[in-house]
Image (cartoon, rainbow, N blue to C red; front, side, top):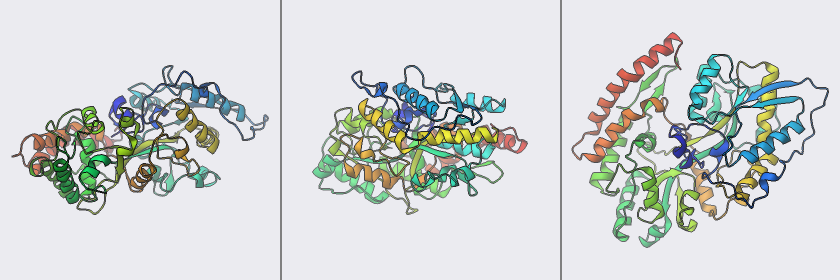
Length: 477
């Protein structure tokens, strides 16, 4: 999820990201829109071209409004030239909106942001990651922009559901910037060798498919499971598939742990079965995620979970036609939500109405058809992996993505149709969940329910009790 730092951004985001998460998703600028942290080609001319500005400029007699945006790219950013060109185009188009750009790409960006907000110096416009947006709405940091959105002719350009994760009680608090989704990555070549013509659709089918893949492809494993110190990142997907979640946000803002729920126990039992009953996982179940990826792109693992990035593997020499993507297999709940990440443009609730409107205009400039196409062309020209999932309907990403099979893009879009945010307070609770996950993967005698109970008792004592007390007293951060 989105608290995985720089590496997480590159593997689950497509972000670069994978952003491939944030995340977890430390939202540090627009680099999360890419599939990989590539540097621009020196031969490319895109960085020297001006960003398009087909709209009419604001009348010069309009009053000048000054706003602050936390979106300045650091000198070594592969998209600095792109953003600088867009900043210049906006200035020409809207001479009465003066924007001060601030670099917020530091690793402590979230803490810096909250400190600035607490001191009354928060930016007028920022780009928080999805999980952060959820918190900022709860805390009243995000402005209600429902009227601005509903009166904008651009609203219908966004894909269905793209505003959902920034909506509360019918009010809209964010403008979709970009989105990525997660799912099942599978090796089509190994599937064909095993006589299997489709990815598994259920937990039971997944386990038996993994066994068949191992049998028909000697020297391979059916599935690389994630058991390292990010283990909860993938485990939460199984809890969703079982019909639950790992935490529950209460109406008063407090949090209730769900580690010991029926869904959580079922999910951990399934993890245990994949390792000890079906015997379809890699030998070193606590190896780093890059090793899981290596197993996949070298053909040693038939299936892994991950973000909708394809360049993580084609960049290592894997044939794009061998890479399949599918929604997660459904669990006992009959559902398989995709973990979605990305960012929203957020307007500061404390800014004046004039600044809020200017900030809204600024954000919508970047989401215009012209700027989205300019952005996509820049990524293509400079060898950056473009996210195959777009939040606007009128950007045909297939024009800008090389060597990505059409069925891959279609599967990514299908997976994103049932989005789910990572569990609330993940950054504070992750380490408590990793212990029971690793325990059952390493010890065949470990009991999932007992291990989860121990983790919940400790997390309640060390994290939740204080957090809830702070919420009720009005001081939680």
